[in-house]
Image (cartoon, rainbow, N blue to C red; front, side):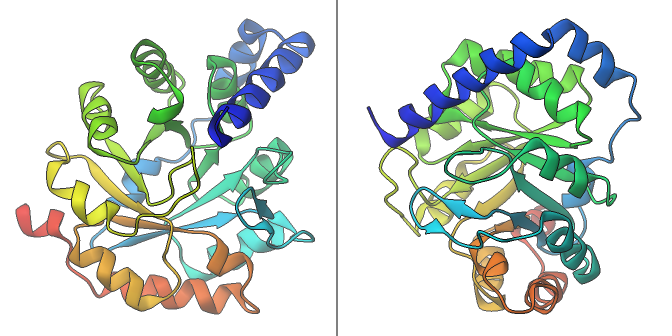
Length: 269
């Protein structure tokens, strides 16, 4: 098994446990009774390069990053910095996240992504019930029918989907389901190898109109500039912010850099 296979097996087990407590039908009914969340897509559509700041305590590749991190305090720091959106890890074993983290951060009002290993519609309705604006769909983790079905389910739930790819074949699959937001992860989740040229290589093949997120490897304003030059509409930043002594200042520097830039997408318009 690859690292990704192991993470997916755990995710499926979590779904089974959650469904034993509340059926997907009941969860869906409860989630739909809640107010619509703010649009994740609209938040990333502002001029320049938008910043998605991440809340995570650990990762499989690095271990503990910020084990004592207070998700709400971190989220407030990001809001104060003016980030466009927040990503919250909800995987409990290797990233040490939770749905409680998601709900608490999303309650701050900034569009929030549930970042997890989505394998079942139940997780999409969990995201909606916990105030998320978007869910992550990892192309490498899903077959074509499941990917399309979960993408459609997110739309039914009123959520955006960030469709994550790592290579040309995965990008083609994302385009085939009509993905409106595509993230390129420089880290291959099957091996944890990092290819920092990945985003620049894939960006020219994006479907017209799809927003492009550069994930992994963004540590400071210079990296935001490089992402803009490669055509990024947004960057997702985690480790550099959760390990910063002043996360507000660190995030604000990225936001300021992004606002001064013109992206490839804007030039094409």
